[in-house]
Length: 111
Image (cartoon, rainbow, N blue to C red):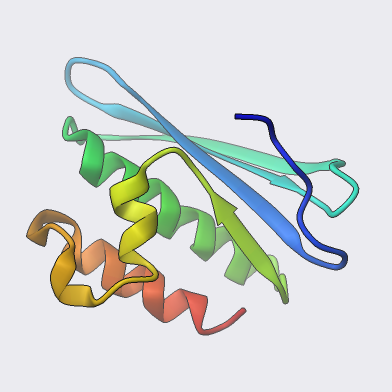
C-alpha cells in the first residue's frame, strides 16, 4: 500500500503499533494535504494484545488531534477491525476494544 495525501485542508494521522513481550509502542505521525510532516509522537503502554494496542493508537491519535485543534482529520492505520469499528454498528466489534472505540467515536464528532 502506498501513502496518499489527504484532501485539501485535511490533516492525516497515520497510526501504528509495535509489540514486544510485555508492552506495545504506539506511534502517531501527522501530515498535511501536501504530505509535509507536521509532527510525530510515540509512547509505550503496558498492553500485549495487538487489537487493544491498535485501538489505543487510534484513540490516542484522535486525542492528539483534539489538543492540536485540527478541524478536519483522516486517520489511517493497518488495523482493519479497529478502523471498521469507527464506521460500523457498535455491536459488531470485539468487546475488548469497545470502550476505546466508543471514546474514539466520541472524539470523531469534533472533526
